[in-house]
Image 1 (cartoon, rainbow, N blue to C red):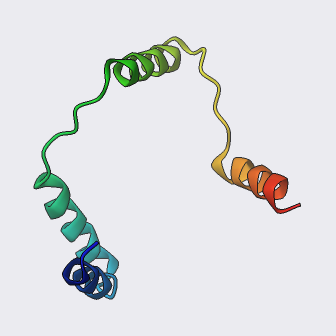
Image 2: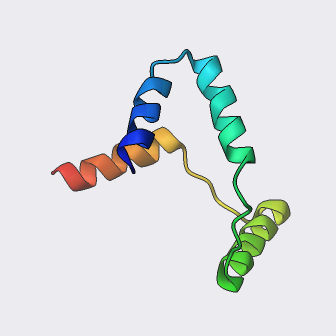
Length: 74
């Protein structure tokens, strides 16, 4: 990140949340779409299928983070 971009980021982080959300939206919409590899496209399709057919399993995010932190901080 250039020093100019870092300065803008530092200033943006001082904005209220609503203003940061608008800024993120404006920046995101200015980007070109990312082209995914065929492997990622297949993985996304597989995950969507599993979610739609009910065979996907999910973990609570807080539980997962707690277990992961415990595993790597011991």
